[in-house]
Length: 235
Image 1 (cartoon, rainbow, N blue to C red):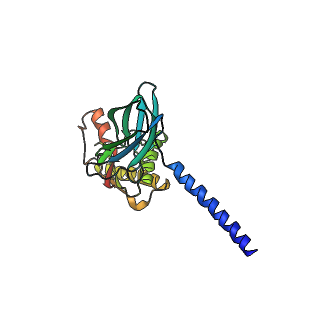
Image 2 (cartoon, one colour):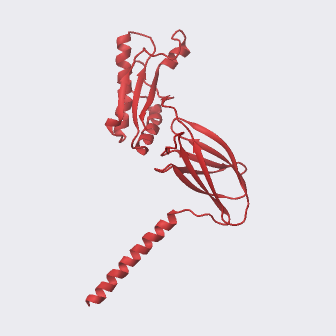
């Protein structure tokens, strides 16, 4: 009886182990007769991997896209049909870059292509389309997606630390503008924290009207100066 129980126990372990191995194998992409394996690595100029970046590979003729998101080593594996020309596009929170095209030949046999994309993202960028109620620090509901996308980036890139910087134009009292800009930066920070981003990874600083990027003499200039920026402190 003991031997029988042991045998059954070992059989159960073998089944679990086999299923686990097969699952692992299923996760590893391999080229086929009809599909080539495109192995992509995305790094910066110092070969540091970009984590959580999106690469879109589009068949120009059929307008069909294949999308992947880089892992912790900046890698993506995509299976794409042979005999086609593909556009390569790299997309991250603040950037959207076309890298040109590659031709995938209709060669017999198993084909693997290795592709390295390098890009140095900006360290500071404006949160475009982030709007607040006039004279207030309340984020408008139609701007939630802007902050949601930023939250998704931060949740995906666990080591990223940022400063949220608030700015105003020169309308009104400078002291009031400083307070308003701080409150707006705080609103963005609090929103990100509610989305699950650790508080110690986000600093909020209000600069008021002290750092204009345009002339305050025109409505267009004032609009440019009323902004919220994200500064990447650590990637």
